[in-house]
Amino acid sequence: MSSILLEAKNVYEDFEVETDILFFKVGDHDLVIFHGRNYNIKKRMTAEQLNRLLLSSSYYHVYGGCYVNLNKISSIEEDCVYFGEKGLYAKNVRVPRRKQESIRLLLRNLHS
Figure 1: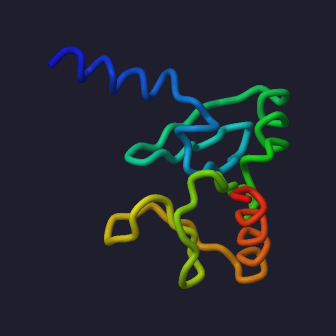
Figure 2: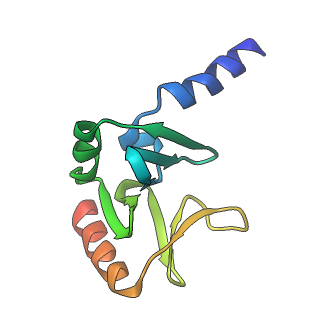
């Protein structure tokens, strides 16, 4: 039981932005909200950390302060980007149609 609690604690403290995060949103005062498979984490970042994150090739800006992890996208349907299996509780982000084509192109290039 205690190992399960330690694993859950590590997800919140020691997550890897490139591999664990599905998408993130940048808020006021350098507050970033990271969305994982079954959790959301709010974290303040320095300007340098935030700039490095925003310049990462793994993430694509979809609207406002929202960036999606291209490596975690499973499908693009009905104006949404889905992460993992599509279903009632699937994590998704609404994406404007003009951005969908750019994401599809980037995904094709990424997988080839």
